[in-house]
Image 1 (cartoon, rainbow, N blue to C red):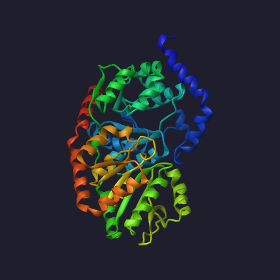
Image 2 (image 1 turned 60 degrees about the vertical axis):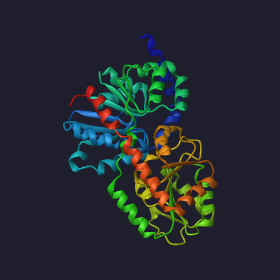
Image 3 (image 1 turned 30 degrees about the horizontal axis):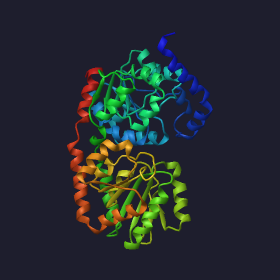
Image 4 (image 1 turned 90 degrees about the horizontal axis):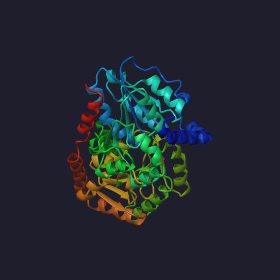
Amino acid sequence: MAALAWPRLAYSAALYALSPLIGWRVWREQVPTYSRLQRLGLRLEPLPPTPRIWLHCASVGEIRAARPLIESLLERYPAHSLLLTTMTATGAQQSQALIGEQPLADQARLAHHFLPLDFPGAAKRFAHRVKPELAILFETELWPNLIHACRQQGLPVAVVNGRLSPRAFKRYQRLRPLMVNTLAEISWLAAKSPADAERFIALGCSSDITHTVGSLKFELVSPGKAIKEGEHLLQEWGERPVWVAGSTREGEEALLLQAHRRLLQRYPDALLVLVPRHPQRFDEVAKLCQTEGWTLSRRSQQQPVTMQTQVYLGDTLGELAMLYTAGRVAFVGGSLVSLGGHNVLEPAALGRPVLSGSSIENFADVAEPLQVAGALTLVDTPDALAEAVAGYFAAPELAQQAGQAGRAAIEAHKGALARTLSGLEALLPR
């Protein structure tokens, strides 16, 4: 047995010990059209008989951020098919939506599976069945057994848009022997910032393969259809002031409703569009609104928005961009509670002024340029949030300026996609 094999063996033993808990989580994170056995590297759907590239993204946000890369890979490698994998049910649904939006010829070259759990046997079965010519892991999806299974087959493994927050770095430091082994099997790592690159190197990644290329999140393209539908909704709702709170998390909706209650004192006809991050919480959030006495309409039930509607619940999947467009101000969730925030670039790319709580450490690198440009404002309390929203309602010209500044900041920071594709081409020449 190799001297450095023990950290991965100890990790695998821990996974087996935790398998009942992991099994429960897998049972919950499921889509009826997929076999649960995919989590064990079994019952994979037939794949096109072509060379293939495998790209793994954790969930919804990563699939959205990876879209420009996905479409560029399809264009650059016309003889290859592309397999997307995700961990979550919402990620699977987002992948299917993305596949459906591609030209028919490209749809035939795209497939989605659930990522197998990182048990040694499941990882080996998956790598043997899929046989990608290149494995690409998005952000911080460092699965030791899957990476090892790929390398055993001689497959290059790249990490793109590599992200390692200070909090995640501290967690991984506790597993340093395992991470040193895992990172030693990476072929190329494209970090999204110098700070991320430094943390990966400090964790054991070779500086020879670690490169700072910028964030792929700046490469996002706002879908035209979603923008048109959002603007139509905004016109349909008339002149009333509308603000959108997207990707909200548990414990945050109550704070947002407090802010909206204060806002209604100044703008009695204001409408809050509330979009929870996870679909399993849609009913829970609806119940919260009803318990507190709000006049609620639910998009999933096609309930109309009337002048009496105070809260519109965006309880559907794949419509966040459209709903951001339907408001005059956007708040990005996961930030009033200590969860590290979500992608503030999405509403900024749509030309909306962006508000966020102060917990944005997971997106600090993309938030900073927006703050400098005056496109992003951080707030700490429901009262401060209400004041910021009211300020934009009172001065539409300031909202427009902030929206334009956000778009300009995004354009100024593009370039990561070209650098990422160049690095991948060294592993898989065209």
